[in-house]
Image (cartoon, rainbow, N blue to C red; front, side, top):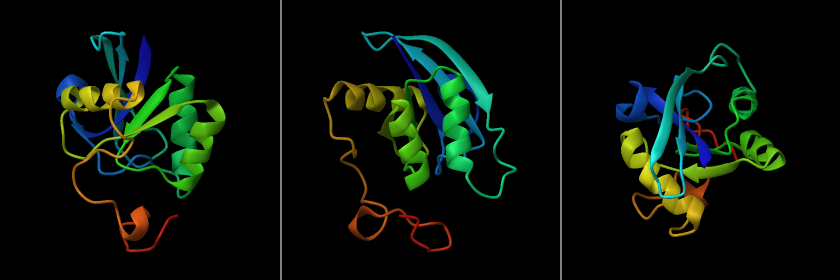
Length: 141
């Protein structure tokens, strides 16, 4: 069994739509998934770090770690959130924005099991050389 937090833009549960950002996602759907890929438990958690000016990614990772998450999923992770995930042993999974949590679970399980690359084969990398760009055009990392 693995507990995964998925960044969502709106909605709740398996029909929620994935977010375009990780740290500033309005909420996270936390799912417990067994070895066969069956979802056993679903919970929606509001992002209580949205009011902070900086360091949101790190705060979110800590919040999700306290929920017992062993993996997190979002469209990209900033350098500080990535470092915190690594230090806590939480596995990241890259998913596109705007898909249902139901579809995201399938992509996440493929990535965590090693059946697909960590960067899904759709779309293009976010910016030159795959670097993440802040919505105002500034490179984050």
